[in-house]
Amino acid sequence: MEEKEAKEIAKRVFEGRRYEPTEDDIESLSRNIFSLHEAGLDKLNKRLIEGGRKIWDTFVEHNFAAELVPIHGSSMGIEYEPENLQRPPDFRISIGGRTYWIQIKNPAGLERDNRLNKMMQDLKRFASEIHVGKFFGCTLSPNFRKEDLQGLKQFLSQKAQIVGEEEEYAFQSEGTSIAKIIFWSPLGLPISKLTLGFWGDMEAVNVTDLSSDQIKKALTNSSGAFEWVTDKGNINIVAMEADKYEDIDICDALFGTEYELCHLDEYGVIHQGWSRKKDGLFLDEAISQKVAGVITLRSKDKFSPVSEYKKIFYVNERHLAYIDNINKLIPFSIVARSNTRPPMGEGNFSEV
Image (cartoon, helix red, strand yellow):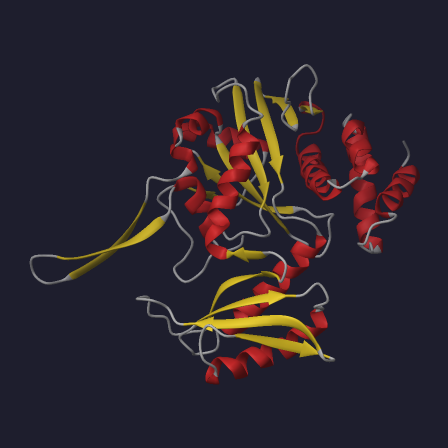
């Protein structure tokens, strides 16, 4: 394969897709295709070319492999979906006398989900500047466009100051309802700002409290690809596309749901702290034996399917001894442990 051929293949990958690629998309993808060809990963290139309903999952696998290959070059033996296994993990990587098994999970959905998530995160930030102690829920119709967001912000700001509770308010454009808002007061939980409680499509609402459960289900399914435990010769890792989720939900899913502690000492001084419930996925013996940790992948370019990733490693404490080996294989910016959590008032660790 020549670089010119790789560019023609990159163009073909995007043909017939609702996503309109930029020239940078095509250039980046062609470089990745050529790099993976040189590394003997034509099987993954072919999977991307074939497309299908899961093409956005394949993009995550393709991007991930394209980051690994330049780091290790010929010193790394890498296979995509290795044969002779009943349910093969996505990658088998041999380096430094160890075998790393990596399963990629992409629970983030298709373009509509990603566009919706970006708009709702923008609306969430806007609402946090409105000093009204209420929760609100928001659902958008499939016809809602990015251009409608500014009008929805004004609508939200006006309604939050004057309307009652448990009544739905429609935001319209040209006489058609394109968004719905509902407000309610917290029960026993004092808040000072307008806070997003749930969001989603009008047809399918994504309740934020369910995020950790969604993550657990996705990762439990992924761990099924490992038919062996993690040890010094075989290290199992799940890499998860995480643009749709906040770090606090991932911590809750893996380490246990966090909760606040507060007590008075004998002198009447209030002491505050926090702890975790015993419901984390890494406390499940079947998962704990298998999975050394989870690496989250957040797109550096959130508007393109061809992107490098910011990575956080959520380590299973049982396998702490392998952190350095894993970091040499897949460099990550932050190590999250069971005794760490995102800063108070934020859902994510500081980006590095």
